Length: 126
Image (cartoon, rainbow, N blue to C red; front, side, top):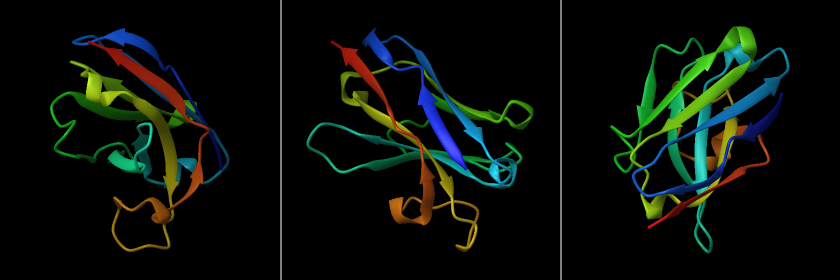
């Protein structure tokens, strides 16, 4: 599976962006897709995930209620809708494909994802 994230940019606090993660490969539609982010000088952190069918999602407390993950398997694309953005949301955002050899339908652990997109930068100004 190859993943490519896009849609990042500069936005004012309180604004919104929608990131896309376009995938190629047969296993995309059968895999959970996770979103991570990495701020400058910090560790990459888990943001949320969407199940393979798109019916189940999980979000960290930092973004719950503001971010929404969805997917369109017919288009091999996963989306991250980000509303009410805050300066602390500034980071490079990555999408990744969950390794189904792990137990559970998702993980917050970076090492449990085995295919990664190249990342897209989101900058939120105050």
